Each structure stands twice: as structure tokens, then as C-alpha cells.
Length: 112
Image 1 (cartoon, rainbow, N blue to C red):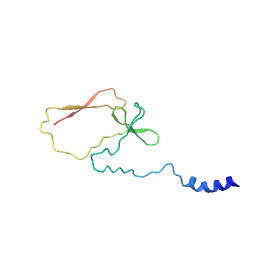
Image 2: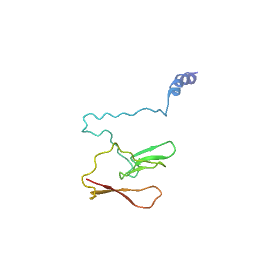
Image 3: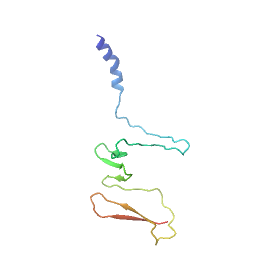
Image 4: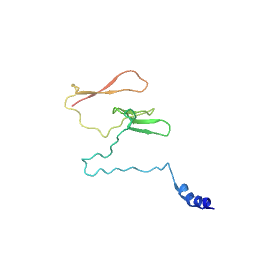
């Protein structure tokens, strides 16, 4: 009888528990001088951030800070256009880009 009573009391709590809840995550940083989010890994070789679609990883930041977008038709989209650089014949720096499955080395020029 005691077990039945305890089960009857716990059943509503179990029924209301939803392990897969989808909600917006909002981080308020305060003054702007503090970290909004600080992630500290206990395993130095594990990815710091991983986003998946339930089956495969589509975005991650590894322990060395490399960002990977793994979707099949992945695009990197930046904000709006800006004014052209003053000098377009002098490259100031290069950004290395790699395409999954492609062994070629690609570089994107950066102008000042």
C-alpha cells in the first residue's frame, strides 16, 4: 500500500518531466566588460562548442579555436556590404580556408 501511494505521488512529476524542451537561451552580460559566456573544457582535446541536428555535427569550435561548418551546402554569411578598401592591390593578410573532401589549400585575401 505504501509503494502504491508513493507511486501515485510521483507519477505526476514523471509525466510532466520533458527532457527535450526547446526554448530560447538568453544571456545578459551586464556592463559589457565581462564575459557573456565562458566555456572551460575539462578535456583539452574535446570540442568547446558543438551544434548538431540530432544526427550529425553541423558546426563546431575545436580545442584549438578552429571553426568548422559541416553542412552539405554550408555558407558563411556576413552582415551587410561595406565600403571598398582604400588599396585593393596590397593584400594585408590571408585567411586559410579548407573545403571538406578537397585537399587543395585556399586563401582569402584581406585588404586594409
